[in-house]
Structure formats: C-alpha cells, structure tokens
Amino acid sequence: MILSGRGRGNRKQIPSRTACCLLGLVLVAWLAGCAGKVEYGEAGAVETVTVDFGSTDLQMIAEKMVRSLLASPVLQGGRQPVLQVSRFRNKTDEHIDTKAITDKIRTALVQSGRVRFTAAEVRDEIVDELEYQQKSGYVDEETRKRIGGMTGADYLLTGEMTSIRKRSGRKTDLYFLVTLNLVDLQTALIAWSEQKEIRKQATRPWLGW
Image 1: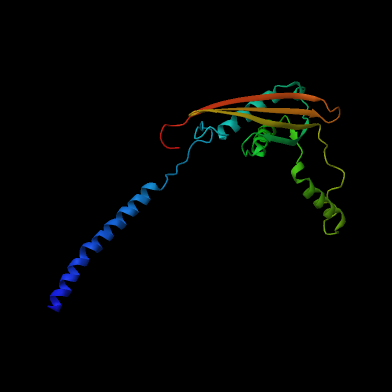
Image 2 (image 1 turned 180 degrees about the vertical axis):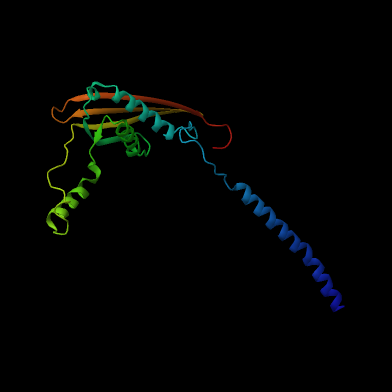
C-alpha cells in the first residue's frame, strides 16, 4: 500500500513538472520576441520616428546655414575671415544639443577652406600649455611657442532656436525656427543673418501610444 501510494504520488508530480517546463519555454520565447532588432542605416536618411527634433532636422539646418554663409558677401574676395562660435540659445520646449548643430556647421565651413575658426572652447588649455612652455624650463627654447601669437576672431557666430507646439485631439503640429547671426567684432554690426524654418506634423494612432 505504501509503495502504491508513493507511485501514485510520483505520477501526480509528472504533469506538474511538464507544465513548468512548457511555461518556461513559452516565457523564453516571449522574451526573445520582445527583444528589439538593431540595424545600421544611412546617416543621411530621413528620420521620422517622432515629431520631436531629430537628426534630419539638424542636417537640414546645417545645410541651409552653410550654403547661405558661403554665398554671403562676408566670404567673398578670397579672404579667410576668422570666426568664433558664441552662444546658441535653445528656447524650445525640448532638450536639444545645440552644440551638435554648431559643430556640424563649423566642420563644413572649415572643410570649405574659406573660413577659419578659433578654438575658443579649449582656450584655457592653450593658455596653460603656453605658460608651461615659457615658464617651466622643461621645453626646448627652439620649439616653445611664444605668448601673444594667437589669432583674434573677426566675427562671432551666434544664434537661437525657438519652437511652437500645438496639439488638437490626436494631431500634433511642431514648428521650429532657427536664426543664426554673424556679428562683426570691430563694429558690433550683424554682417550676415539667416533663418531656417521646419514644420512637422504627427497623428497619434487610435490604439496604443
């Protein structure tokens, strides 16, 4: 009777273990299905994941500004003016890396060979290095750089970015306005100004987010 009872007990446990194994397999398959798929895409492809500021907006802004500045009278005549990137204010309702915008503009302008830029963001490091070379006594006299030889900027490149966001039911309309100015340091006059407008619209689906 005892052996029979144990046998019946073992037979009752077998379906339970099988169910647990099946449940585990289903869970693993579900988790695998939830895992996202990552693929490389073209950096210049149009990005429309959300209505918010994205890579395509950045590229459109940089392209418009570079093209306009290169065609302006400021860069005519063969002279290479020296520019310095100043403040780029973000007045939108989003957290936008405005430095990424100015970096892309600056890179394109430098590569054009028609503009030079000061490295204002590392100026403190440059000053420290110059003082080290001149005063430490560790740097060979023939290779040390003299203090007072930096090139002064001719213009400041400054600007701001604003946005207007409107929602009505399932629809969202987002408008960006980017303004760049080139200010003459000698006269404090605006030598060049350009704007880029971007409007995007999105419709939220009936179900889901």
